[in-house]
Length: 353
Image (cartoon, rainbow, N blue to C red):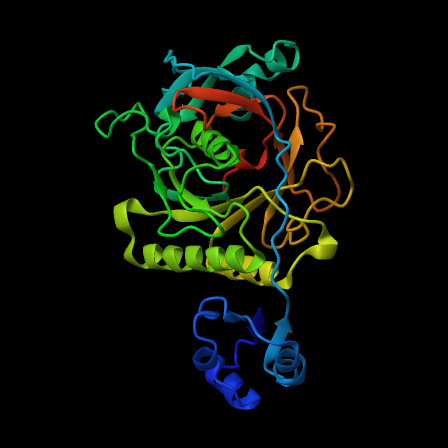
């Protein structure tokens, strides 16, 4: 993968090295205009003797496939609970959508029940929770993950005629997928669970399934560039009351193996006005996973418990931006469209303004 400086064109680069790689490496060359990098399968001599000697080259790096942590759920599955409407304490000032929910949602949305949650030892207990009507409306949340069961009941709620119930059909697949994936379905379950968390606190948001399961560094960076392109187009056209975009990433790596291309893609996304969030990681260490180190561009989220304490497994250090509920979380399961799973998740709760 070859990243060029912004002022250095691809044509000028080819002229400097004396080879038009896009013509001589058909099928093995791919250029991404937004991120201004190209990938190519080529011999080491050309890389070290020609490409690296071009002063317009910012960096060169080998592609790789990051490992994926599958230790995130305990396998407990149950039917999805129904929403329960009740009278609203906030209705005199705002329209609210009121339900009884498990502790994480209530903790985030209803400050008045914080002591009840903290003092409860029952992880299955439900508490009153109030959400503002239209929470998340017009926001595209790009979930870069293992795929999503977009037909899950929790992602297809209500109808457009009922303003007190989140309209359905707001989960969709991105226009392409990345990595060795034959379909858009959830190959692991993690992506569906993340989408379920997002829709819990922002029921009117648009969930976009960007499948990057087992995708390489190049493919994930390309996905970010494609998201940026779609965001910029929607920002220009403003379809359906578009208000902005968020990229949700629940993956990372040790800082020592983090690729510069990721950092460049994150900066480009941030410059485009896209909110970025990622998990701090679940190794109980004080350095966290990257991209948490890029706190200038990204919100790094650690895991907290119902007792308002750091979860024992959560990473921690100065790069952690905030903590959110991350232990014993009930959310959507890929096993069936009406099933829930108990899991470890935290980053999907946050929002951007």
